[in-house]
Length: 564
Figure: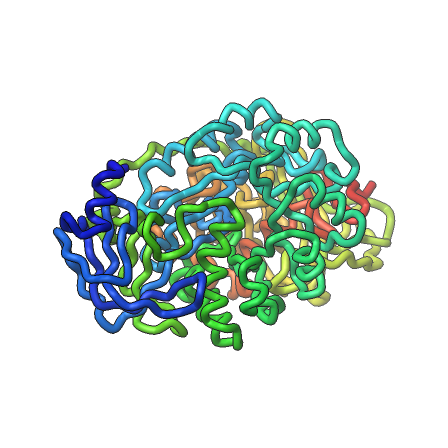
């Protein structure tokens, strides 16, 4: 941090600025006007605009648009399948200068050690990684995790410089019913930011949830739901991830009147989608293409996000603000030509100079004995619950089919799009194996399996052949976790994720290539989903309506109970 005297001297032009951006048009996210003049930067801070400055370094941006750096208001970096350092290198050059992350994926596997890993990494990335402490590890009592975080575990990190507050409180039934353990966490973080997660919650239950001090929400999937939540004091984080795609439904809300209370987030987005479409830049240009006012979109991506989370030092290109700046040729297409994060140009040299934190949570996949028989679905009742996929949503349907048992087993039926889904406890604790049915993958042969399985991150597998399901699952243990596609006893594609079964040790470009191979291999099984692996991961999240599966069994989320 530069001395105040130095900031003032450079702001007044008495000494040369450290860096000057000359000739660009600055979008003011307060007034919507375009400002002319140089931008003077001292260290990581903007000290001058709307005037002429001299600098020790001058970069000509004549004819370019300059906008504040983008803020992703809710994501799990682990779901990008790469380390925080590779995520930094992947998305910062696209304009993302702040990522407000919840490391609850790794925390569900490695506990406090996982949070500590992200806090350590945040000190060395070019982008600013802000950490929300994982509030629900596990998310419910209906799953087996590798670790449990209680209120004392969270308080231990409360004063860390990178910590903002408490991450998404998924256990909304625990809040509205005043569960004692839930209340302890809310009381401990009362007055700090507490992030929300309340899909389909409305009426008095929503009133109760918001009254508990929760101010942001990324689970609204319709304009009606989002409007009620906005009217009750919540900031809406419009999500567009690899599976959850809410932008189309919520774009009409992005108006000049509403935009101070709207932000953007990705939640879960993998390197393949980032390479093919983009990150927050994709959300920005898509919203504009769908008719949203460009100024409102850019304000939502920066200033509105900063103010929603109490980050008073960013979101506007103005004196005293953090020098997070994106240089664009065109506002509508949002293709970053240069990005400054904290006054540093996000280029290869800056990324190469970072200190890299050592990986943790190796050898975390500890399976029970797995055979083809592990995937039988036994039972005498013909009436069978089936998870119904809704493409582009993590909300599922709770379907019922009559499936008569044969020799004590209910078999998958590809002709009816009825695939086996299984969740296998992989933390070496209880060895649970739960099986059921899912419709919507269109899988005709083989199997796919993964250790990315929200939020407990046990093994999840979908397929129609028991031998292939067993092979895919066993292979996951051999490669320390990841994704596998199997057909006819052969491994067609795989991606190893040896850090907690969630993150690769390889560069994001290599991860992108392997994800492309996995997607192609999945299609040879008949899979029709655009992103089958993350869609599969969300089949096991028992806080998202309506029907899910964990290692405890099929979960009726509306009743918040395991189906007997």
